[in-house]
Length: 368
Length: 32
Image (cartoon, rainbow over all chains, first blue to last red; front, side, top):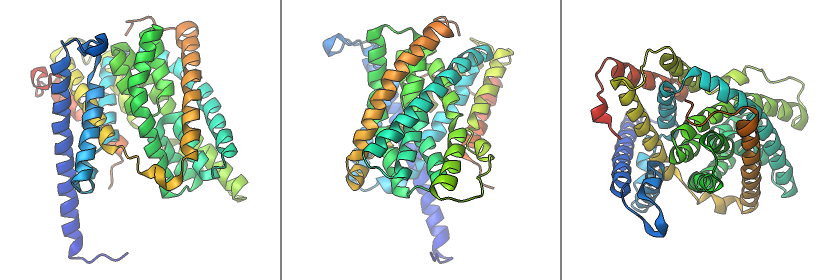
């Protein structure tokens, strides 16, 4: 690739302008989502649905989706998409969320989450790998898909793709699949949990073990209740911490078994792939636990409100980043596999979270 | 040096926490 020294500063300037414009669009859409939430809050909607049941994640994702269509139709999407930073906004929100949860709760919920995570990741990964083989998917595609559906969607797919040297279009394809299925699950899962009468900790653990992207997990938890949001976030982050181990195992399998190489990949990949923002989340919780941030103080209220804004920005970006065009390129077999595995994941996660968080390691409702 | 997104999110979040703790960000401005 050759780039002239004259055109590079001009390109940098336009990419910075695109990034800033993108962030401004996201912020405006987040204000619209907040306005929509407040506008319907006191209303009684058709089918007897109370307006307050429609929480801001739903409005933010819907408004993001509509804007996605408008920006693509007007040809402006590509120039500003660098400002659509779902992961960054989400991680900022999660670290801020840490200031509302005691360290004891994190330890208690994480213990259950580790047991749940090991069961879910193992069962779902191998089921997906087996089913992908039956449908004739390539080894690299099913490795990326199995990691995405069993751990945490987009970032897990990228980590797995690095380990197995997957093609770029395979990552883009799985990323699109993850977001397309996570968005409806974010809305449907809290409705099912409500119909089943699940206590908030069990529902939160179910969302954390089942919904594929961390943003949609937080969204589902937010719609179900404050405690569900907290437990869902802890369970998902614990599961995310397993990415490194899976990435290492995959790199080992592909280099020694598939490619027949003698040298083994370094275990340093476990730390390299560890989601570092989890450390920020834990440190923020320690500030709350040791009383540096007092519950009910002005600082705590401001941080809690900023957390909601950060999540709202992330949900808007989720809607903005949805792309279904990728499916035509690779055919429908991977879609069928992904949907069957998602259904398996959903049912198994419900049973496992019910047993662990309802009976083995219960967290009393409202105990945060 | 390029900062990874994980660390960037931690830096931004703690900057916001610090600003809230010293009273530079009021809950009234941020109300959601």
